[in-house]
Image 1 (cartoon, helix red, strand yellow):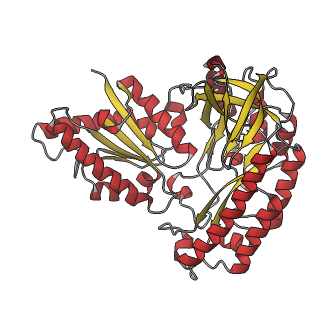
Image 2 (cartoon, one colour; image 1 turned 30 degrees about the vertical axis):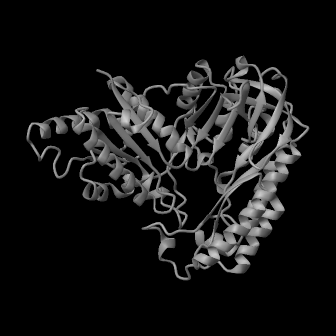
Image 3 (tube, one colour; image 1 turned 135 degrees about the vertical axis):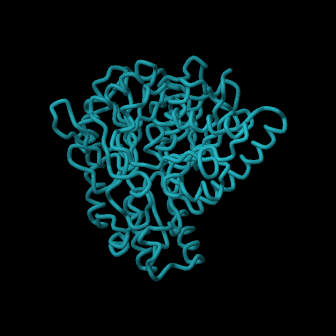
Length: 471
């Protein structure tokens, strides 16, 4: 009998990709997607450790799943396997099994290719317990794997399935930067890049299945240094040139970048390849050199400005988003003013901004001069107001322009389709249903704070048109 799997994904796009791959590896052993936890025989929480109180949110969700398991048993529906994956699992695996001994599986981001054997082990343990062996699987219920294996997990995964015209493709994992506020080096491990040929082969398979836009993923995606066919290391710019040769691949994106890893080859790829979208997420975190040093970011304010100038010089329609942390330990009002001045100078069309919150085990959590919460709140509100003004201004500037939009969803209104602009803005348009999953030329006729409205001009120009979108 077919079993059903529900995965709840927290956090970044890497986790979204990982969730898809976990579903892929479990499909051959009989697990089909479920729409909700109460319709599943197995639930995986794919967790993120970046946000505040991440682990407590996981334990709260686990409590609800425990009740769901008890309800299923009372109704005679059988057991429910509960798994915790991702970065919280990597960082706190033993703690999860101690506090929630009813959890069946705990696995880190580098181990999900081993899920089928872990599921088999958990199912055997559950069957043994049902027959009276309360010690099955050792103390508690759980099967734990938070190792960093020597073998690359990508070598053991099936080809990803395409679902719609856009797809994520993981090319790099891990981080060697050790920013003082961040847990990623501890939960994802050292930087690893997949070989160029493996990435190109996976991309080609996705395009053959109907994908037209690929977003390359990595914790530090532009730190990519995969081995090429000639045995030499290749950077992200080289990889993008190889991908651009795939017939039918019309859009290339990548995230998340680090300023330290932007090089001339990547800038040249933006200049030369029309498939490269004119939108880059490039986190700066702070505009203060003093705070950047305390964060161990490895770049200065002026270096960031130079990198942005180089990227914008590669094409006149390029725009940026960024990440910001306010209230980092020791941040003064002058440091914050430096950040505001940098934002005002560069201009960002989107941004993610947060108050600093300590992550256990990171150097910043033990730093003196922690900023009071009320000061963090005030600074964040001021920064977000400026960022929102910039986003609204950019959206309004797009009105009257034409751009190619990948229409990938049905809208809420009859006859409406939704898509994403080259700048990742949501765009809605009244258009024939057969244009779904295609790229269409739209004229932007309205702009809100977070979305655009368009009218259909025509199907898009031939693939890889060199015309720029929105200056």
